Amino acid sequence: CPIRANRYEGMPKIANRYGTSIRFYHPTTKVWHVVWINPVSGSVSSLVAAKVGNDIVQRGTDDDGNVFRWIFSDITNDSCRWYGERSFDNETTWKLEAEFFMTRERK
Image (cartoon, rainbow, N blue to C red; front, top):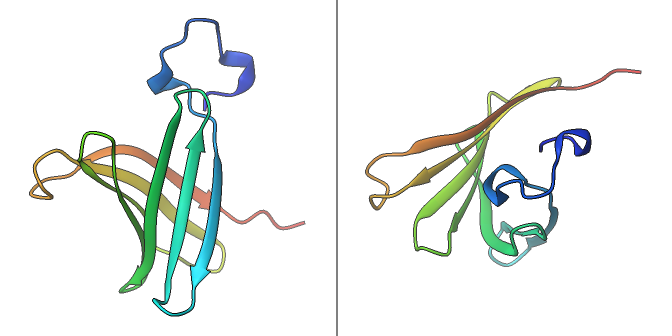
């Protein structure tokens, strides 16, 4: 985001997020490893994902040592909530940074 039509030269990197995710399952540890690459900012994030209750939680640490997580919750066959949070105080509190509500498209 944003869509390419809304991008402009000199746009702040924080508001210009395009990237690629590579995910793979580790059968011994039974967790998913996620690597997200953002060529706009040069950011590379490594996360570990696992099922926590009914949710899927991906956790990582940013370049400043803060913990962040991406959570898939309210998962049904047709929808889910996907949101990202970051903690600046060792997980005492969390700041919501992004939130998406997804619905399956039926053809």
